[in-house]
Image (cartoon, one colour):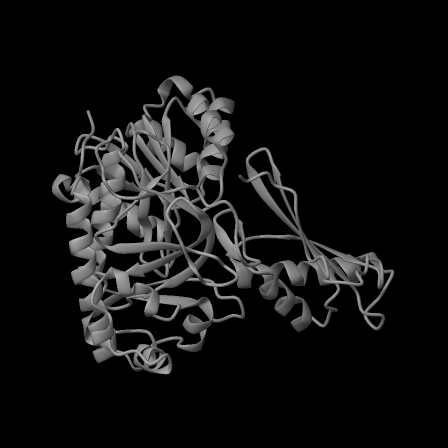
Length: 433
């Protein structure tokens, strides 16, 4: 029998959901108009005033918000509450060194944690469970979000953060962790380590919540088999709050969007035209309960399908599919957002050329990132030590920019194949969808 964290909300009628969305959208539009000059100017630029938005049916009138807006308004330009009311930021990397910084009031955090608590209860978590959170903490939203949700459910929470696998396994076995929260690739690494150390009979896990990167149904089944669990997907973006924007239930056929907090649309990424539910398109989200950093019609660049219908779990929120790709050039590697422009910025700063290739692969369940870049004729040297020094410097600079380690190969001038059309910068051989 399905369990819920907030049953009256999660199983509300479609009419009730629409009523919440209509009222909260109007309130949010008025809130940003009155408190944020950036939004006010965007609305004025298309001839809109708050009174023009009376319900969700008017949502299409609002202009889109994009990552470019977030960069242009960095750091405080999209904050819609007084700084004195804000208690936290979360952040992700930016494409040109400017990070996306999201602000939160205490109420924003409470609502976000409610969303994560719903995700945990949907996979069977109760106050009797031990929840091991292996997402990164700090600026990354994964750890703080699931940590807060776990507290609200009443689980014993193990705030492990990522890495240090020996310690992860010690706590997992000694404290009897039953819920695992991490990226799917790290879950696979943990499974491999458990097998190597012969700990399988000491593991008490029953469910895993895995997100922040793409993973296939085949990977789901493999994780379930190797860890003896049910593996569930979760979706979120730092810009919107973090994990918990949507989550899978026991049916495992898509992620329920928390529609009392977010309105979702699918659009044609080329024209911006709103598509009917059931169509494959770019997902656009509007946050309707946030105070510090509400985003109106934010283009996620994720391609997915929205589908509404009766779910065996009893939840009435619309479902979104796993993201099926991107409408931009962003890569998600080991849970980290990576843009080719970030890599190019590092290479040029190191005095190298813009002739480079980014090679992404997946060995087993772990993503690999390699950057091949040509030397300039001036820097070219056949001394191995000199080349290794340049490669090491680039590795360090990329780690500082991206937060993950890449393999770097410096190659001879003019050795990377040229293209007469658009340069092929990225070769991604992973099978993600």
